[in-house]
Length: 294
Image (cartoon, rainbow, N blue to C red):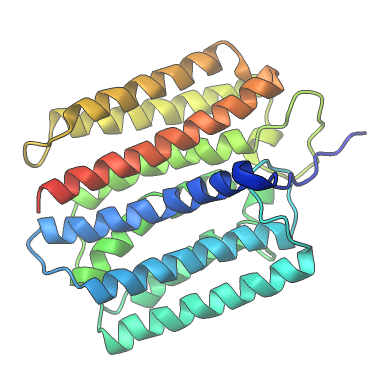
């Protein structure tokens, strides 16, 4: 029986850009939340924004290193570190994130939910692969990852600036959550010819056609979120044409799934690149839109 092993990030530019794209996909929602606080009329603290960015980066690093420390059958970009080294790096990153969280809550007085929000990031990031939670092996990694790359960082970015939350956080946060869900789903698809180990990711637990259906449902919700931003903006939004481009990319992704891209390794890889591009693209466009409203 052939088992799917943790895929190491290729060396050189390909590996760097894969990791950079995931890192950017995690940071953009936080920056969006930060700017939305300014849009809502609250003053934006540059120091809080910088410390929060460092904390989110540390949590992303902890999650990535945790995946190397506890190898899983996925095709996510990897640091390519030995498990022991990756485990130490993950603990160091968690420690840094905790220290930054304490500074934000105690020194900068960002609110009582500062550490709990960071704790949710730890639960959803590092413990996606690390015991005892193993979200990925429970088939919940895609949903948890979606929240950690969507609604959670948007809410955190907003809350750290003002100590409050507003419903507009959900407009951007949920759209990014559904998009991120598909990013993690596609990167968990077993390549054709590989037999997935039991108790692993959602895409590996179901038949390829069922995985395609799940992708379709999340993609429809992602498209719906972007259409909502087009039709019901809080204020007239610039760069509206960029949303149409992203909608077109989402349709291309859907067409690939319709043509059963999950049955060919090359197309699975292509779909992985395109879903990640859509996620980063949405983050960039939402960030520009929020910034233009300041």
